[in-house]
Every structure is written in structure tokens, then in C-alpha cells.
Length: 99
Image 1 (tube, rainbow, N blue to C red):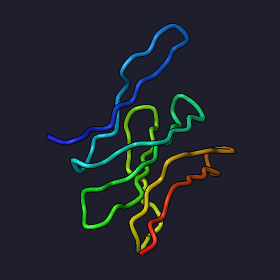
Image 2 (image 1 turned 60 degrees about the vertical axis):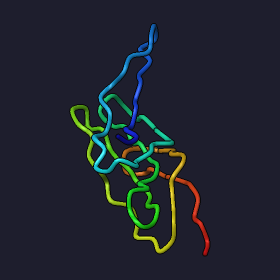
Image 3 (image 1 turned 120 degrees about the vertical axis):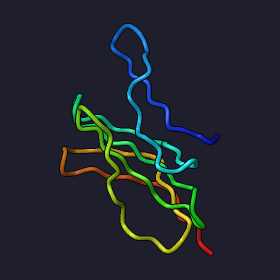
Image 4 (image 1 turned 90 degrees about the horizontal axis):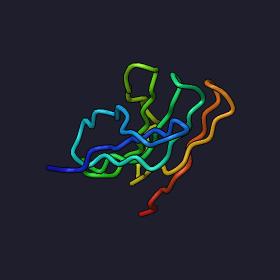
């Protein structure tokens, strides 16, 4: 058991379940998404499966989701929203838990 990411897509008429990132752990959560095109989609959230919460980002290339490593952090961090000015200019924001 555990949580699995869920992605739905609106095609102008109806919602449908879309391929979603394959969770590598049972406690990954997606909280934000930005789509630049049908084959350039970014999703971000948190991986809560380890001893500390880590930021989590995946990229859709039109055929599969791939984990994109985030910056190393020393605290419990999560990402909640994304914005992009282009494929090479993606921003993610979230929360850092200070000890």
C-alpha cells in the first residue's frame, strides 16, 4: 500500500487519467505541474519515504516520466509549484523546514 502519483489531462472536452510517474517509493507526492508542450511537462512535490523529506521532480518527454535530480538539501524540504519561461528555464518553489 501507499500513495501513488495521479495525473489527469483535460483535452478540451473531458478529463482522462494520463500516464503518471512511476513512484520509486510509497510516499511520493506531486503538488505542482507546468506543461510547456505535449512532450515537455514538469511535475514536482516531495519524497517522504526516507529519514527526511526530499524535493522530488519528474519530467515527461512525451513517452515516459523521468526523475530529475534536485539540489542537495540538509533539511526536510518539499516543492509545491512550478513555473517555466521555456524548457531551459524552469522554476520550482516550496517549503524548507528549519530545525
